[in-house]
Amino acid sequence: MRMPASSPTQAPAQMDTSVEIEDVAVRFRTKKKDVTALHNVSLSVASGEFVAIVGPSGCGKSTLLKLVSGLLKPSRGRVRLLGDVVDGPRRDIGYVFQRAALLEWRSARRNILLQAEMRGMPSAAARDRADELIAMTGLTGFEDAYPHELSGGMQQRVALCRALLHRPPVLLMDEPFGALDALTREQMNIELRRIWRETGTTVLLVTHSIPEAVYLADRVVVMSARPGTIDELIHVELPLERDYGKTMADPEFARATGRIRDLLGAATSAD
Image (cartoon, rainbow, N blue to C red):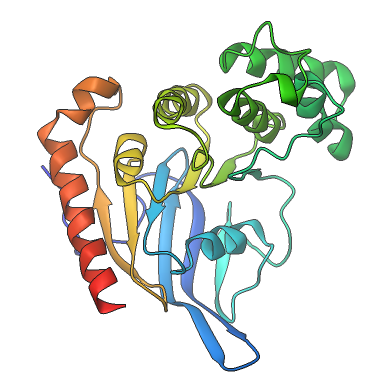
């Protein structure tokens, strides 16, 4: 049964809140006009929750992640991360982008350990953590390979390991699988869901794929066309353990994806 939408932006009850976005607006000026990217956005994300964000192109999905990371300041409202107001770049989060952005002259392991070098992590602990993540993501045997020797999916696994090396309480993912072929993307969805269950990290994922959002997330934020607002927050009533094939055939999967398509169709028509 679907949870009621009367309080659509609240984190699940009786859980600590990792991310709190409070009545946020983002405005900026171009050469020709003032633009409102986000308007009246409020959202609470519980600790350990997986939240996906979908919406039309240009609606402010990536802007929302930049606010949480502290790379961008809101024009109005505020963002809290682990209870603290975000007033500048946060070093404690993890960030994965659409492109893996690996250094071509460093092996997979050394690309992962770059995070430790930048943070001054003890080398022994960093190596142990890197080995743990390499095993977790199925990269064993490829740790000494260079980026040009890795497939796109493997490169994204390296990027994910790099982002998780310092055990971030919050992981931000901006279209991380958008450049992958369909089969590789499906496999990465399965692996990401498993890794999230194993690590317990809070995840905010931006994606243009409705099936990906519903398969991965506890809740899906559906945003309107610019100025971006939250149209609806969809609670995904699927089991925690999600077999990919069975999930695709589940009536709840059809309900959630159908509702999101209806909302995005309306948003596109209104744009």
